[in-house]
Length: 126
Ligand SMILES: Nc1ncnc2c1ncn2[C@@H]1O[C@H](COP(=O)(O)OP(=O)(O)O)[C@@H](O)[C@H]1O
Ligand SMILES: [Mg+2]
Image (cartoon, rainbow, N blue to C red; front, side):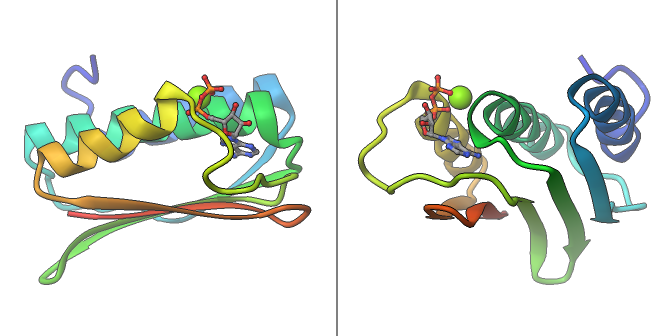
């Protein structure tokens, strides 16, 4: 799926096309230079795709911010949008559950914070 490009390059390429197509501004605050193990990279990439799909379809956001860092305390992923938000617990889609499962399957956790009228932030750690 990501071929030989590596996770950071794959995310950059995807975001660039996504931003052109949707008209949503993308701010990338950080992407790792170190190699990320394949199972973790696959989980992160899948979560990024689902998060972006949700932002495109549901948020009405003008701006999307993404930060992905790796270090001694592990991997951290934050994806924020400034869209309409939603009331947590009232929406039961497969996408949100699938994102959480992708991270828990590789020993991580994923949290969704959302405020109606302000936006949505997804925070994950592995
Ligand atoms: N970034 C977002 N901004 C606004 N609403 C969102 C966002 N992400 C998810 N939602 C809401 O949560 C619901 C569930 O999302 P999800 O589980 O991915 O299912 P689906 O995308 O198939 O509807 C969405 O239908 C939408 O109402
Ligand atoms: Mg979805």
